[in-house]
Image 1 (cartoon, helix red, strand yellow):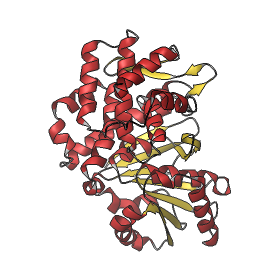
Image 2 (cartoon, rainbow, N blue to C red):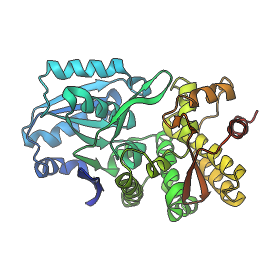
Image 3 (tube, rainbow, N blue to C red):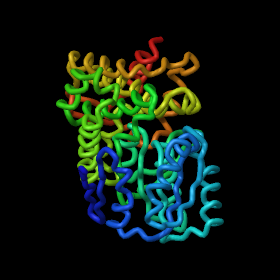
Image 4 (cartoon, rainbow, N blue to C red):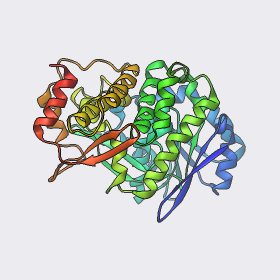
Length: 363
């Protein structure tokens, strides 16, 4: 089993990755001296797929298990749903020594992690992501949070897990749309930090996009998580270099909010956002035209839904003002100077942003 470590000044934790890793969960719990009840949070769709299997895997441990089912999708990332989970935890006598196990995609990981960070001022957390997007990105790094009607992930915390368990075999139940949404984050890592990964995606897209080979999936997961572990280790609280992980997210988050979190999966919105950020990179004289075309070509292979006509330049600009990366110094942008090389800047004018949005909206 591959093991990647996230190393921070105050703690370190592992990311375990292997086909059938879920079956080794009891051994990992023993390794991490987990002897307390497990409060397992999953959405209803994931619960139908994996709850009985997880219970069977954990049965030999003798640990008390409690299950909570959230709604499916971004609508679950609210204070109202978090409050319902708090009530469930209180009714089932959870305390600070108990452990929340997040089983699901990025929404469940973010929501369950936020609850773990805030209930009784902090519970321990285990992340077992079941989507490609969560396995390559959102389950690692300690960012947890919920949405506000004015923007995504505006309410949250940094709360790192005891460990993250990545099992490529859990991805075989995903539909093509979920796979493409996850691959958007893989493309992101190639764009910002790993030209070899980008080239591998470009040259072998047909095989990679079908997620048929567990060993190939494991290689993708470990490559992306190694990049994120290194970046997070250098800048846990996103005061500097960690911001490069937001490539494509400034506009992507605005697209999600502008459509009521109902039109795009997160990765689909990021795919649009990466194209616009690459376009802005060219306009700023940073990114060669040839690299821009390669980025756009790969993003188009992700086949995100078209942007609805109801989304306007003005609505996106307004939402971007509420983005976490915006402050009194202006909007922080993640741009590219080459494939595999990201840079941060606030030197982007409103006119340049508007031009990139008009190009994206093609209006």
